[in-house]
Image 1 (cartoon, rainbow, N blue to C red):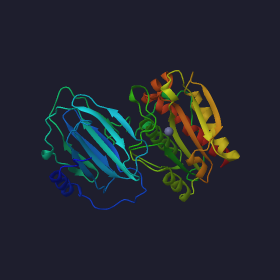
Image 2: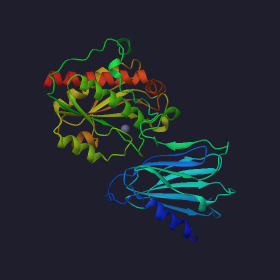
Image 3: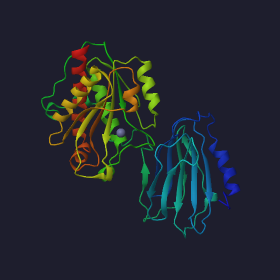
Image 4: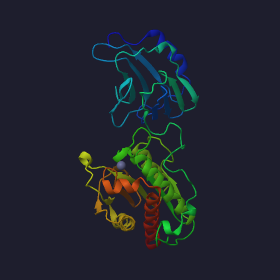
Length: 361
Ligand SMILES: [Zn+2]
């Protein structure tokens, strides 16, 4: 780092980027929720609200191309490198020091970049935009997460009341006492932590959020008070998920995930549900597992198992963690890509939960 950043540029960024001033606590999760470098050369970011960003630029050297990097408060869970194309060599997400997230954009050699014209523009409290280069036909958009919240999310339709009967076969939802129960549904991962990435780039965070929203709506229709631990693409720490459920004194907690196999083996598919303790947790897991298997014919039953996952271990109420299929598996991924299948899975999970509540409540 001998040459370090261009001083002028840094000053410039300092002014623009201290747009919001509150300082999140040091141990919080990454403030970077989503990013996209678009084919027109515009970098878009979505962050937590009130995030303070710092950006730096370094000219190319023997070992590196030109680099722009932006630091965000909060710690990244999974450092990773994304291959670039066109003028972009690669994009790296890392944690330079504990409690920080760094997004590095490295250019290939021989680009006539003009960083002094770069301006980070705050579009609203949590969205940012910076034009890095002009349109080049050779560059294809790269990104992770949804920079425009909700827009083009897998399925933000709220109208599942209109789910047609043929869509879910003969699954009917059991009746339970109105307004008696409080259920917390936990869509796994989120924000800068996409969870498993499967075939054709299908992402766990999107799939499980979609399914969770549908489960929630179905339960609410049945008179069960239901809350999600996250309702959009934010990176939420595990302890926060647990303390939310514990503080609400929820009757049950269900965390929804999708699997990835080691080595991304396409022949590995299947469903499994975990609990940590107690016959109630086990019963809840069994009910859910039984129902999701019904809507996933051909996908192996990997069983109901005891698992030491943080969220089911530390929640005080009966809790289950369901893996609704392998995003890396040929059979499961193809299904989980489809709206209709996700609705069916959501229906199955809701049915498992309602059955459990009607038996034990
Ligand atoms: Zn997961």
